[in-house]
Length: 559
Figure 1 (cartoon, rainbow, N blue to C red):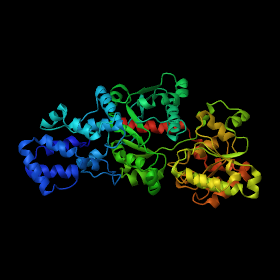
Figure 2 (figure 1 turned 60 degrees about the vertical axis):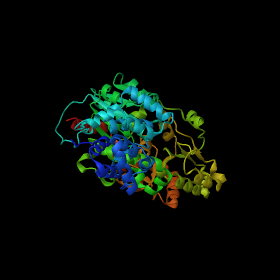
Figure 3 (figure 1 turned 180 degrees about the vertical axis):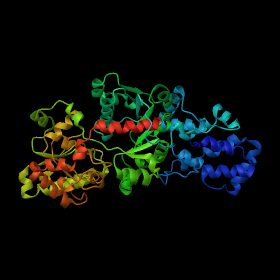
Figure 4 (figure 1 turned 45 degrees about the horizontal axis):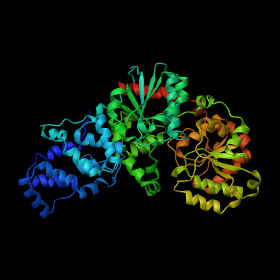
């Protein structure tokens, strides 16, 4: 096990220095510069009348130091010899819940106790400056006691196994944890991560009769998680346990998970889990399209990057859904060891969709005002989803003779209200008033309605510039016997043997996309068989298969 270096260890070393060396090291660590002559003389004089602790606190909590704490990291991969300021930068601008947990860990070397967490969260929400809170922790009796010790124990990265053992271990695992520690409310309904977890959980419970699933959420997401997994809890009574706490110490002590699954790389609180975890790295799309994402969602990108490397580094194993993400994101961007990374592919949602009662076509169309033939792109409209080019291509098609007489509509399962591309889409629609009412944003629909959305569609179109695996909508649409037109992207080519069967188009070409829309409309009756043949391997795969592969990896991690 490797030793985890924290701010308290750096301070412990600095406080044992004397004179010039103390002041110089203090400045380099907390201000990233040498002290000027006047500053050096000032603090040397102060050392004769003030104790070292007070001087360290003064520099550490200065406005100059705070400016450094708020700066984004320049690189995803941290310097192995990070300064104290760089370590603080990992958590200082974070969500309050992670900020408090990290403050306890970095200054006191432990997770917060329940009372302390509650009091400090209240303080953050009331607007108490973080600089003041940092100083209070540093001036606490507990911190002062730690600094008197001859040696402060290093935190052994929460006892995580750093490498996965070779196959051969057969330990039986009864309790699998799924960590959903979002530090803010998030609706899983309509999110790809929600469907992934639902299907994987169903696979675990169906394929392994002895397994219990423990879903741990923060208080912000407990009700939503209860709702998202309610159907599975009814089907597998007593085997899904949902708990909630904002305190990682409580989760570590009360949730009997033997191994955790952390489903997304942005869940920073997972770093404070004691038991080993498997991290699901679906993708790091903001590095795939760095200029696009950092220009429009810089706060999100920097927040993920602050701790993504640490989350991956501390994970016992990293699972991606495609070889592309494994090679380019886990190994390429994040420099993770090859032997630590794995590919477990997803499967069509056959069991899930069969569990939903069918909706009468007339009733369904009336519910969503879908009275005309339509093609659908079911997705959350993120920047790389390429929906603005799809709209432009659809407008071009509808403005042609055959497109006009088709009466075809285009349906999205999201809204544009807060989308950064709203103005661009509005300009497109304004230029085509005759087509505008044929493009519908119905919002996120209940999961139970998704099979009907596919079933009654003329076809599904998937224009996305990138996905972490063969896009969900392709597998979902074919499950409901609805043909697909799809962008020709690398992850799809990993498992689709003939992309021409999917009317493949260059996602950057509006002309090619228009031609695929026309072909989907014209030849829809003849596409389904060749598409299922070109994707036969993936279509025959089940979520039980995926769960068994996860379980084998969990056994290795536990061993």
